[in-house]
Length: 461
Image (cartoon, rainbow, N blue to C red; front, side, top):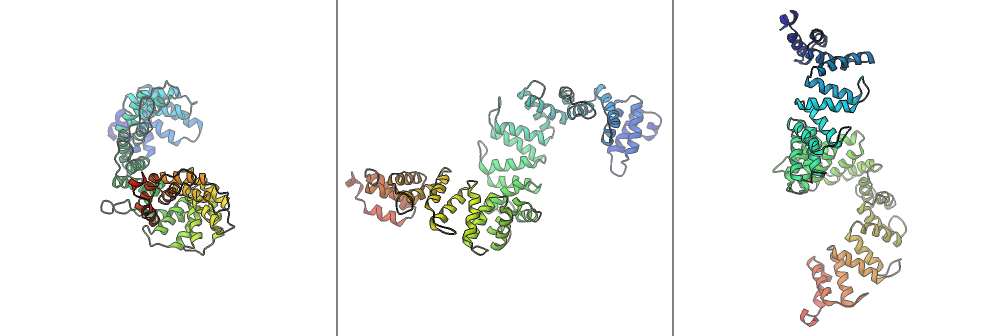
């Protein structure tokens, strides 16, 4: 090949240029590559212009060198080289040595895409789907993205998956189709697609069956590639015992989070604290968990809540109810449901500060807006009398009813008592019987006694 190149054979010169620029590491020599590409370009060979132009563009550190590199790439495109069209499309899109011109970019991407250049198919598909400069055509845009995906472009596969997952004009939501493309992307190394596929399998959306084992497999793939959200999702599965050790080895989530925590990452600190508090992958250590929850609490709402609980319980640290109120209040300010409930109880019991039933009422009402049956039951009890707010049995009845409708056993018991005794409503023994029966089945002895005290159903009629 060298003899042919030295004899002036332009194709051999191009091949030598390619070998020196992209061959094995031990033979790579950029200066030799430029020499042989340059000779091929001087002979008018388009591939010589393309090879020389791409090298010069990478080396360009001023406008003059950039213009020279672009001129070579332009000659390759003028000779209708597919890769030349693609690079010229990038040049026009990113304003490299020229003014930005998206119309020209789209034109060259189209020409390159039609010649099978995968990256051009991806870029042109996006421009068509989004209607960037060229007329929007979502169906044709999806087709080009699909072609790029089938050619091995993981990012294009992810985009096709998102189209079907979200649904759009001409593309109704199709989770099974979306899952197929997310799988293509994930197998191509796209960690975001792996995480998305894991969540689809974890939740069982649409036609995708719920499969925690499959979910753990894909989440682990994303997590091992450094996706912190996937690490968190997988850790949550481990904590909830959703990872089956007979199917998949328990991942070292504690190691991932320990490294992140030590680096100063607040999310990593929070997740490492959860591992320590729950004994996930490490021996349970309440004191160490408290340390890392505190580290994360300045930035992570859930850490504020967990640290507040630790202080209230004195678990791993000295009990400090006043400071517990402080951290629970910070989390409650973000409407975190468990923080609203726990802080309300501290107010009711006068722990860590003065008793304040009105403050508790406000917190319970905010929690009830999140469909919390526990908050609704507590409001029923507050309005039922014996507290620092005005007794209102009608409101008490209404809150007990709402909580009972959400399967709260003690609320069902209290609603049954109101219905049996005609408190704030007409007596209704049959409805009371149903309430007592539900609460009794939940194991409440008071409900069993109340049910036994009712007259037989036939006599009640």
